[in-house]
Amino acid sequence: MACGEGRDNAMRVLLSKLPRPWIVDEKKDDGYTALHLAALNNHVEVAEQLARAGKADLDLQNVNLQTALHLAVERQHTQIVRLLVRAGANLNVADKDGDTPLHEALRYHTLSQLRQLQDVQDVGRLLMGLGAQGQDKKSSSFIACFLAAHGADLKLKNKKGQTPLDLCPDPNLCKTLTTCHKDKESFRHDIETAAPSATIDECLVCSDGKREMLFSPCGHVTCCNICAPRVKKCLICRENVLSRTKIEECVVCSDRKASMLFRPCGHMCACESCATLMKKCVQCRTQIQHMVPLSMCCGGGGDVTYVKNSNASGVTITEVKNDQEEELPQQNTGGGETILMNNGSRDTSHNDIQKLQQQLQDIKEQTMCPVCLDRLKNMIFLCGHGTCQMCGDRMSECPICRKAVDKRILLY
Image 1 (cartoon, rainbow, N blue to C red):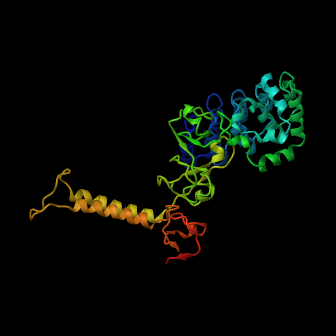
Image 2 (cartoon, rainbow, N blue to C red):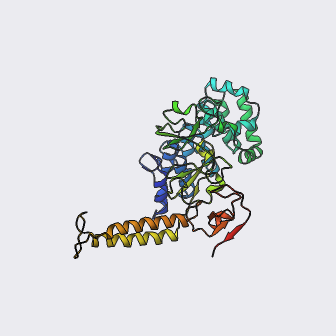
Image 3 (cartoon, rainbow, N blue to C red):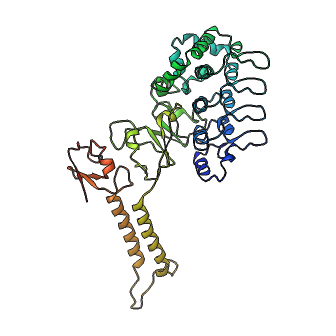
């Protein structure tokens, strides 16, 4: 269920508590494994956890002898294809018809899609387009070139005696595939090291504006501010859009645009540099379980960052609060009614406890670092504001008043 519905949080918990690791590769009656289901439904984060944390076998086949890569290519799920290829999936496994993933990629090409490739002169640009969701009509060609550049065999024949090139009626694409396969080392280096394609930033609706609206609950970024109100379903995952939030500048440094999506809260309020300091969301103070980069939210590549949460001071405060809550039923047994003491005066101890709890929370907020919300303040600047030492060492401006940090003073 976690794989079929894309519940990456549930999958992470299951993998961390799995008593028998081989269960990850357990097959259903139809031969589908968890990785097959994730690839079929385009659940990128779940597939990444299965491949990396779960050490899933990438080349297991279902009853039709299809691997997860076959299914991803067949459904044109470019992010899953890239993930599986980089994780080491076998590109030349044949299904029951003898077709490899490259056969599948070229079979779903129509002549109208092939004609559009005549305008593409730069093979490097073609390869870099993989993962750009705005290029749906060319996704088959991108996948085919990507597979060829990573070593897919162009001469393997299926049971009908057809090679992948026999399924491609466009001579321009055949030439491109041959070039990609011949120079695969150089093209692979270009794919891994070059900057993301400019199409990742383009609005998928108008192609004029830049993507700046975050959709909830899916967390994808596909549209500009003008086009977003017209979009009812996410253009990447087709999930219903419940809310739209404009991506603003980083609330910590105010220098760069926010570019890290926090999970599970779903806020994007910090840049990549500042987000590495945080264990709690600065907007809602929810514990961060993992962070998704903006490039992945736009349908491109990237790596999910998992956060280890440990807060000694938070445990202490929780223990104090629990002790006070245990004393509360002993003092107030009147079902919410005011209790009279022996001298006739009203017992106000319940209100006093509530005040103490609020004061304790206020003290906690005043003493915690305003950047990471996790460690105690032990460094102040000349402006009078402070942070923890780990955050303060990386600040060039005060996160509160934005004054330049000239001197840092440690507190003991």
